[in-house]
Length: 268
Length: 329
Image (tube, rainbow over all chains, first blue to last red; front, side, top):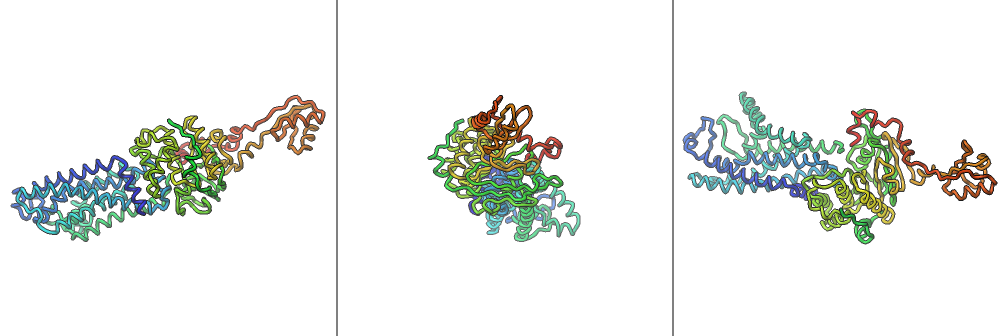
């Protein structure tokens, strides 16, 4: 198993994708920390405790969380991309044949991908946090806000690594279920950024949907895990552990059904 | 391109420390929907010999090889290596080395890194990778991105990948495609070396008989997914003989048969004797007191035989719409 994981890691680090991704992850972490740091400590936000005017609001903990994990919304899509490409590239360049020749037990080969993606996502997560915490703490300090209001921040930072890993697995599942990797990427990003928020708006129009469906959607769950600021005070939000389980459920569903399909289908 | 000659010392170090395994295909069948790509196919591939797996494009060769390698699930039947099916092998790369298509490389990854990725799955050291790059004659290109490789270099890289685990069985799908004449000659010598001197099992597919004619010991010929003939190359050549023309073909045929030669009298005073020994035929005719008007070696036209064997409505040509994909499968 260790050898399989090592081969999967080597696959990623022997193409140019990984360092481009590293730069993007670091910069997005730093840039969003700067942006959110300035935004959430501006006068108008501070005045509006309840935050009705559509401007996100929260307590100091939520503000710090949001600043440090601001890059996460870009970061998890980058991890989605890594996940899609880790399998999509194999289909596109037909290297999947040699992968399964070397590891004919396909479930084991795919499990190697899963572990490798979790490791890689954690690594990128650390890189993202280095960018966001250094820039974010600086901005918060300069603006007179509390940079580390609670130990909960540490939990948030750790959980953001988990979030990235789970989104990479969601990508892996998408990459298998939609064999064309460009289509998989477009559908994945469009769903996370456009379809889900719109769907969320529609669902939230009904009390039942707002309370029992919307919180379980992947992006909503992601926000709940890191306990970021709330977009609207009416939103129902899961506790961090329930949200983590929810996102893990999505990752298991997508990656699991993808792997199940890979094990069964012919490779030609 | 540099072409290294497989010298005994270099090859002998790590390539070929273990003798081959027997490959056995029994009742193998694959249906894609209503289309039968491979139909109740049975044959064996023996260690220490090079076996040519022949058939026109779309005959089901690649589908068969992919079933043997566990990449395609058979509808029915089995394909085993020393009695074990590929997915159950404990040391896959050490048992079977396969080069299926020379195009299957990530264009952004170097040839050397491609081998390193495969090597990592079996804990094979980088020194082995470099050894094979030298052996297959591509060390100069090894660190360049594979996207820039020529077809010949891809074939060599695919061969290097197949040899990585010092396998007992080597399976090569159309390995001569894209190789220059020098490369083909090198490959021929190399395969002979691996089979004859090291006892490995080698299965080489091709849609051209003359391409492998000088390399293979045995042939398995399929057409439309069905086995047409299996035997040694000598048996395939067996139909060759001597054509002798004389005044009394019946009497000459009888004389030849007395010398344990199969002889058939034909038209125009011709007798067809199943032997390549022209001198013996001439002497027998002389002893029988018959004039010899013509005495020629009649070589079996293998290509014609191959076409004859595999003819009968090539389904590729019949219905291109359906076969397009399976042909590549």
